[in-house]
Length: 468
View 1 (cartoon, rainbow, N blue to C red):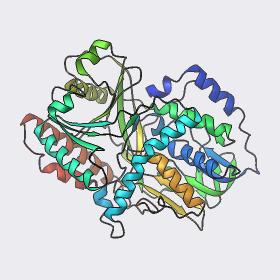
View 2 (spheres, rainbow, N blue to C red):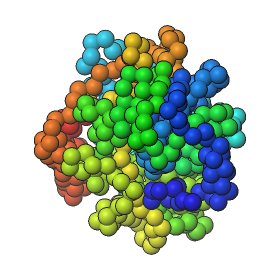
View 3 (spheres, rainbow, N blue to C red):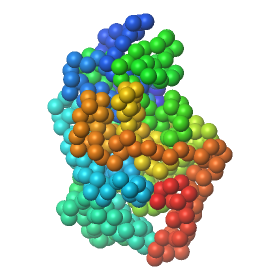
């Protein structure tokens, strides 16, 4: 049976993968009034799956259960752009406003995120998980002069926080065109490290490994509330010596603290493209691809020669409604298609699939990995669309916390980080939509008038929602 969301990733899983999944899920013991686990994890996305994996690696005897309201990978983990990148899931500017966080800690954080790419690759090789992982690096491109200024500023900031000369390289238009022939490209920056993945395959691979290791995974089993040492289900109370919330964009439905909200990102997927397309436009290394527009895009070349193309055309729904099963309206799909054809002009793309998903965003755009040692409760959230790699690092950090280990990971800036609360409605909706309107206007003005630098009111937009 196909998974219950509309992403191409989930819908394209093979019958063999789904059959193996179903057979292993049938071995999970039923819940009872006496159900008790060493660790209860709420949420079956990347954060929860990685947490269970590293707990079993550290102490195989631990009893671990994952409770998922829908199916494993239903949320952002099964719907994202497949970017295993070095992007920090944080606003460095906001982190450094806290006096106890130093530049050295930011650099250490960045090194850990870079190393996570090899960590994920190593797990996939060790556990036999084929998720189309390909280390092609990452290319950010500027397609007008204003974006080129923004790109240069971005490059200089990145170099300040831990990248070496060979890890981050500025490229001229000609050098960038040698990698991907985007006619409008005027400059680029290439990250040496970065990999594309098929996220639903990674989710299914981790689920298989966990079930084989004895982790109990309960799908279609929503947690109604969390308490100290227990979670409440429709079926009753389940005990847990440690209870960890890994619900990302769905977190506030459980914690009710207005610390994280669901922000939607939208994706279109082309049909497989023929050899003459690739001969014309290049992209032989299959780098991850992004741009420096204020309302930016992200893309990848898939293993079967499609283009995934994403952005945030419908960012936030009133009262923090999530993306549901992922239906994408035609207007947003058209916006993404238009931008795709601007980057790769003159080609009649056919779109096979379109969807959206909800990611978790905090008020200051910083994630947190928090654990209360007295109450034995914790939570991981706030990756703001950059969680494919950092969820792995966050899970390893949480394992250290649960086991009481002081490590270099527990000293990272997101450790027990306290996020501010979001405003109440309607101010939250107005602020977010005002920000995106202003950023869209900024892109339009910069392109139409061929400006040599970013417009001043783009900075206002970033400040409205705490992004700078």
